[in-house]
Length: 234
Image 1: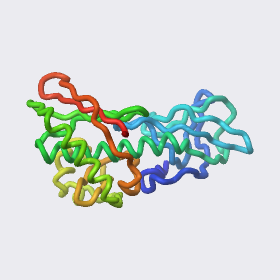
Image 2: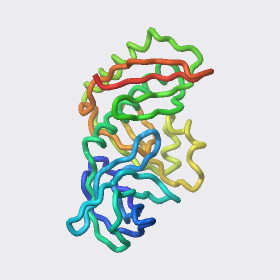
Image 3: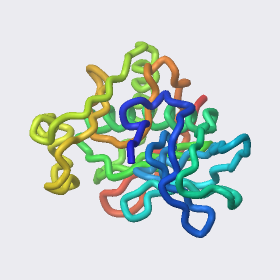
């Protein structure tokens, strides 16, 4: 399967062939721009169109290493040619949150040395988890201001798909070395020049100017060495 979003996050429509349909509702295509539930970023929604009939895509995930598209009704079959349409309002929102999370994570790491342990993107808010023993709440306002200052720089993002050995020379990527099994020969790196280089399979904006300013509205302790910050767009 060709995963179109890995090289171009801006694809809104695409054509594909149906390879397989399970239980009349789970559709595997030979190529897709639909993002599956993964890495803290929710799945895309949208529709598949075949011979003028629309099939609403309500869920997308990886099953046995293949991206499956759950549609709202039966009718598609192997061999069908379809046109995929992404719900762009939903995708665009998640792209903005995801890139903002990378910026915030980079700032937290640079300021505190903390490692980012996870994130979860949602429509109303996003959270970032990080490993830190002491939580200096007085610094949170400065994190917010620094994220917004970077957003205002109008920085073009770069997607690089690098050979494994080359990617693992990047300091922020080498920390994740154990996350990449030996059979993975290429690593996708999202670059925000002079801000962050991070291995990531998610979707992102093309330029930081597309992101609204953020507001950090909550910070909490989640246990020993586990801190969490929530932000939303202001």
